[in-house]
Image (tube, rainbow, N blue to C red):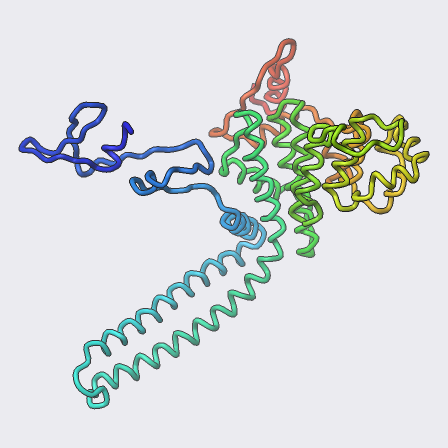
Length: 413
């Protein structure tokens, strides 16, 4: 309400000029006055009256736009001549389309202002003939350029997996910032990590193999970059979310399975409202987890009956010291690594973190869960005179000696 007079431009004119009421006072108003407001919300939902009073600009990066930006970047680094030709053709096609529209508009304007019979107007007939020839030439050139652009796009699409993974990782970084403001990373900052991963990827002659190397390097370098700036307890959740997003993007992991990992039956169901557990060795909480998992994940829809039919093997697996490493009864050849994680979380919640590590190892690789000490040489390589390095200190430890040692090795001490 305080800003309504400004937003609605309730300007009053008088002999002394224009004024607007603001906070109970009449303030001078200038026609060139502009008010810019920025929201920290990523997707704010404003009331209809706000949209009517103000121009709302959404600067949120769209998936398609980010995909194209990342694709252009990786192609410009891997095949610079191809990206240059792509941009040149795009500009050429746009110019030809503009020329064609100009010919059509000029022709329509001549026809609209023609007097009498069109056939008797020699000037107009000649103009029509010239326009037809010009349009045919432009259409021919446009068709040729479009065909060449299609061939170039087919080659650029070979690098699409790298761009798609970059989008997945950046959107994950945006979501992880909810854990702590320290984890906020700008798109510009991420693009530096994105480009750096290209230089560290293994070389390959075949484009397909090179793309595989780029994808692997991007996964690992972005994980190392994020782990370096994270508290210890957040590193494994980050890697788990990366593995899940990668599988979800590939279409091998569905939202229902992710929800089954996040919310167990013990949290959502009541033992009094569900059917009686058939076996005494199953705790109540575990029984509720089993029922919920059978409802959420298709492969486990008969899990309660399967456990009841083969209770000796299931009891043995349930009491195993390391069930995440043991062979699953009935489902060993039927479920994926993530589905095995769901079973461990369902029946043996105390082994969930170890099962998460096993899932990450199978999905991304062993090195994604290995502990990595601080590598100041890698930090220095990523820094610049305009990119400071900030170290968070804790009692009994500090980077001073390591920094001095690195400086001596670089002859900078």
